[in-house]
Amino acid sequence: MAHPPARPRALPVLRRALLDGWRGQIGWSIGVVAVVGLYLPLFPAMRTPELAGVLNSLPPELVRTLGYEDIATGAGYTQATFFGLIGFVLITIAGIAWGAAAIGGAEESGRLELTLAHAVGRVQYALESAAAVLVKLLLLGVVAWAAIALLNGPAELDLQLGKLVAVVFAWVGVGLFSATAALAAGAVTGRRAWGLGVGAGVAVAGYVLQAVANNSDDLDWLRVFSPYEWAFGQAPLANGVDGPGLALLWGGGAVLIALATAALARRDVTG
Image (cartoon, rainbow, N blue to C red; front, side, top):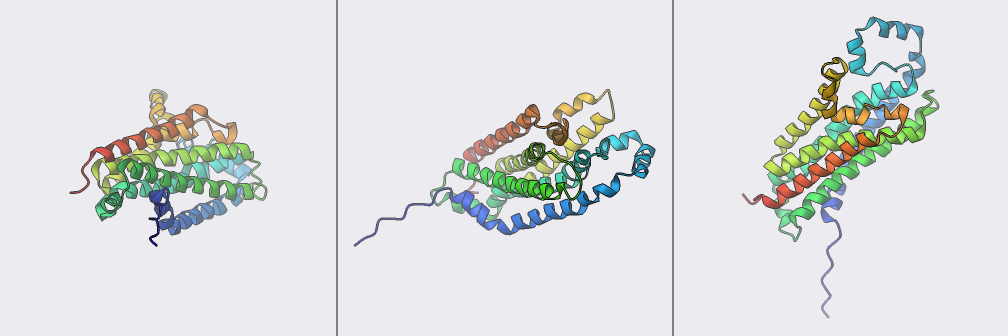
């Protein structure tokens, strides 16, 4: 007696991306925990008159660029050392790598053409690839929130956990913006290198624009174009959710995903 054909599994591209990338996910998560565990426990030792003297001796432009104006507070220290610096670098590199590999890298390796030949539509592939990148970034956000929350008491940071959620969403959002820029560039060109370059360019430009705006009253308008400013300009770890900033980050990411989807749907990938 013949058996009916097996139904295809739901979300095959998303499932495969998450299963294939679990080692990398663990590696990036360990990196986030290591950075949090290295920097945040130092905060009690940093609250000294000597630190204030050192900060006063630095050029004000450098202090503003590094985000050290409020480093004597738990929120300011966590923002300056993790979210605004090392953590920003980690989530940006991870997101760009995942975004560039999702379509551009898959096309270069031949995996994209093979997947499309197995009854997976181009729109489906692009959307599920973007979803996989988003899920990975959100998992890093959960790891970061949990690690910081665990150290909140021992490190005497006095952070409000609700505001910690707000800054984690901003942190994931700024990583997502660069990641989707890499995804879109890879979809448009079919090349992983272009995805890496565009994603990195977006991240670096955002940081530089915010730094320049912080140090020049005449160029303050540049911060309007900086994803880094959208994420952290209103200090969400101290002040709570910044709705407009989150809307720009997550809405911009959605627009870039739509661009990637349209580009893959229209382009010949068989060559």
